[in-house]
Length: 216
Image (cartoon, rainbow, N blue to C red; front, top):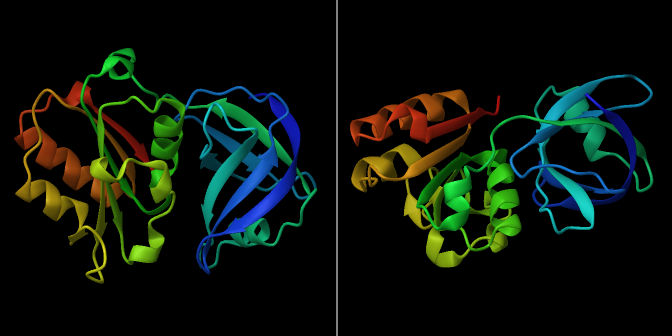
């Protein structure tokens, strides 16, 4: 993959564990839904992150959650403005089908920071005919909520009754059937993706209409 150097412009703190890194874009081209490898120029350590920003944004941004015992996410959280970072990519095929840009219904299902590619989709293509379910533990984890139309966004909180729906995204989908004509994109932990895929197939959504991206 192509490697370029970008300097940090801002660390935006969202919660004590979660933050957005904004880097100078320098003409970096990507397709919404793709990812890059962020790599420390000194140590060579790196990790894959989905692009959080839109095609129209001046910076290129990444949503990061500090992982317990994760040295690289901790390193990222303590970066200072103007710090250099290698970006390798973009890469990945978790991108929108062309019919979706012309009004075909699409369902986005995310857990945690798996919201990143969907924010990039919606900010890049605001006319999408979408519905999004975002599964989190607590309401303050509604990362990027302001990017979405409030009538098309459902925050599913599993540990407090402060979202739009109390329970996991899987519980919501079992209560509210999905039209078989819908194309579905799932991004988050593997357990959610496996369970949601089974629910959608029970609604007769064909496997080729279910796109997945696993966040470990």
